[in-house]
Length: 342
Image (cartoon, rainbow, N blue to C red):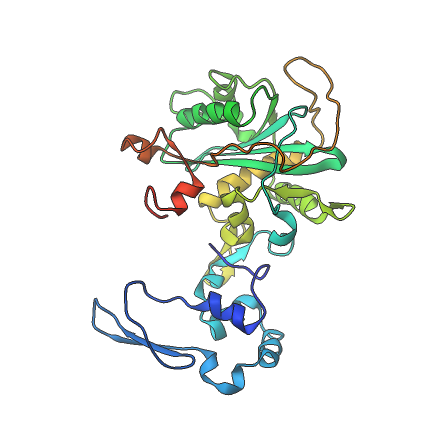
């Protein structure tokens, strides 16, 4: 998980809990406060780790506040807290996202009377985000699906299956990469035609905006807006990759000291691309029930009272090939090490 200035702790005790990046399985010896050393078992070198707290004058909160005021957060974390991951790059939404505000405190239910919107991105890590547009244009992000070592066709099959499990009898609307009408899968069909075919049988496919600035702006619009103090973009806490992407996994990397103009392509970028395509067009799309044409009776849903499906998905074909699963495992299983830690 990348750490950004949005969730960096400010007090000394909290920093002490976050800043230690030590080798695993190696004995470390504490010579004094702020000074550790250990022996590298591979080359037998002795390694010393000297933290600012070794200097009594640099232990106070007053010194921390004064020093941080003159430095970028990432620079402070590198120079004084020895937290190197803060230099991975600049999070795309570093000025707009706050997990305390945009991530729900408990699992979110869905409203069966409203259309479920699916945002799609295809590529190395095909991704699908599930959301609903609520009254007053509040976007509720309910689920996520990430494909790893899997074909587009297989991923679409899995999304069709879990969609029926998570949202039985729901009406769906698809929001996709606009190049999906030209790009093709392994069998020569375009991505949009794959969505319209079996087993997904997509009834309404909307092409999202293609310009990166417009896509980012659409998400920022949701992040910055609120309805009577409630976030206009609220994310279910089990949407692990979306949240970690917001926290820094979806980022601009450095190239020779300069930030690249486009976000890095990684496991977080595809699910965020999918979210962007959805955000660019969801407000302007007629989300009436698509299967029977009936208008929905819009009412504010009640969250947390419906039974939540047990699965929050990461589609991993490698595990399926090994006979460990049918291609879908949960984030909880991943965290518990059932299929090896990421």
